[in-house]
Amino acid sequence: MAVGERSGGLTRIRIVERDGQSHYVDADETAYTMALSVNAEPDTDQLRYTYTSLTTPASTYELNVRTGERTLLKEQPVLGGFDRNDYLTERLWATARDGARIPVSVLYRAGFERDGTAALLQYGYGSYGFSNDPRFSSNVLSLVDRGVVYALAHIRGGQEMGRSWYDDGKLLNKVNTFNDFIDVTEFLVDQGYAARDRVAAMGGSAGGLLVGAVANMAPEKYRAIVSLVPFVDVVTTMLDASIPLTTNEYDEWGNPEDRDYYEFILSYSPYDQLEAKEYPAMFVSTGLWDSQVQYWEPSKYVARLRARKTDYNLVVYRVHMEAGHGGRSGRFQRYLETAERYAFLLNQLGVETLIDSR
Image (cartoon, rainbow, N blue to C red):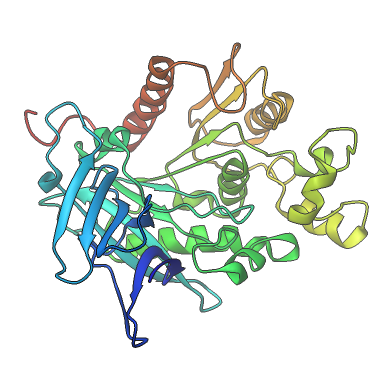
């Protein structure tokens, strides 16, 4: 019997023998995403499964569970001279301030030296029980080829470590999500993966809430922040029950008509907590037709940020006039949006060129 399961912060497959003994399907890396594929024939020794990681494009394998022989059936093609041997990934564990162990998936170029000089982009989400598993993205290689370290912080609010991981990052436990992200940053810097003054953070939607809260709580730890269609005016939106999504969201954030929830949401709402102090450089984007986080939320946020911040760091506000929550339609339009964000990050992190002539 083949069992697809989530354990140890990973999705993997366990083979259970008739005598009850079991073992996991081998993986090529310590951080990956593995899942059962279509297995229409039950009476066979062949198991089909999918595999991907930050270095491995989406692939389908067939495994002979008796002999252990593995055959690659299909792999997503990657243009541009991609060679997986140019990249390395690993699974790390950061200790949060309350003792929780936070899984972190890291990607960097082969030959990278952990000497505390590199630039780092850390991505996070941490809401709705969504697990941000390590998957291949050719876009990210554009940054890694320039020496940037890329990290996925599997913080509480997702379900990477099970249902309790979600419960510990929602409602009145929401602050754990933000603390985890900050603590992962501190861990990566302390371990030499990045220079303390060359760290950037990125998140979108509820991940925009994350990086907005982090910018208020620990602005000194980040040189730049990219906040995409961010949910930043939490109190006002959650008090408006006429918005279709609001009442359904009470299970995630709480109902602010309850005083305890109101005060707690207010304590981390990015818009409400903006202060007269220095902030990282910011790139904030929205879509005029966004039905999930309406454009006026980030508009208010950017206006107040510009009015209150005491620094001269760049604040870019990009409004896509023909886009919704997921960005503009079309593959090439999405590439243009990604290139714009990356240009902002490379400029702010002081990254000038590719590592080699490729």
